[in-house]
Length: 280
Image 1 (cartoon, rainbow, N blue to C red):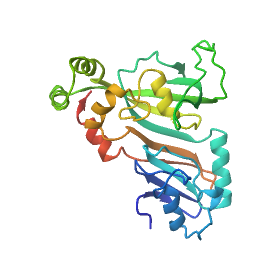
Image 2: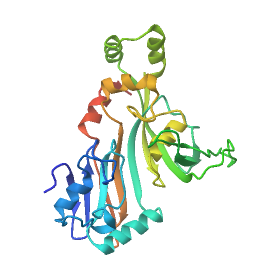
Image 3: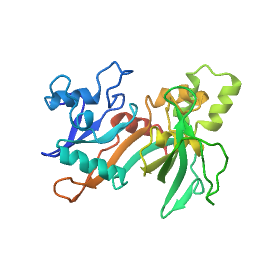
Image 4: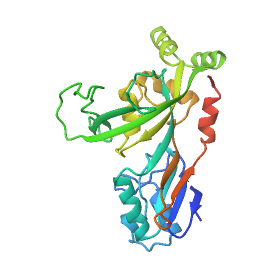
């Protein structure tokens, strides 16, 4: 029985689970706490030292520790190879829900059909575990700056789902409970009142891709401890205690039946609660 994971779907070939925020997906030398991989290993009855399919208990892709939502796991070698091929060929359709700072405009990205698109190269930058844009391209396809890097191409499509602002009485209550200088108070009044909920469709699967891309257009995800502005983090955490990013839907071809399957996950209660402080 899975303790920390909700089973969304399971058959003889695949397992789809709903991962809570705060749970690390894969084991590593730097991770000391129990991981999703550990729980799956116990669930599948793997012997000690047996890492399972793909050396990670069949986990077909990954989610950041801070991100909640849907994760697909293979239960057979055929299923694992099929899912890996679909991810590699960008045939898997993933949708995330994010709440970002500011009002996202219709021109902030290259238009791609009915969606907006962000294209860039992403690479590890600065401190360990942090990534950034190293080759941003303009709408005309020209590099906007010339830094050469070994970064990997990343593509993210998104659509605006709604624009929100803080309810006046809630904003005032949070502000009054903080120790702010006059400058910080004015900064928050200007930068912490408007938000946009976006549906995000990553076409590639780079580490921290969504978070880096949304920050690159000036709209960091709420309560992002790595990519959010330092001046906003303390305020964010007072009303949204964790990263507002949720993997809400995934669609792919079933490895056995060869039919399209689609699974969805509702916004978790903690994120819904945070939204109640805002109004459209």
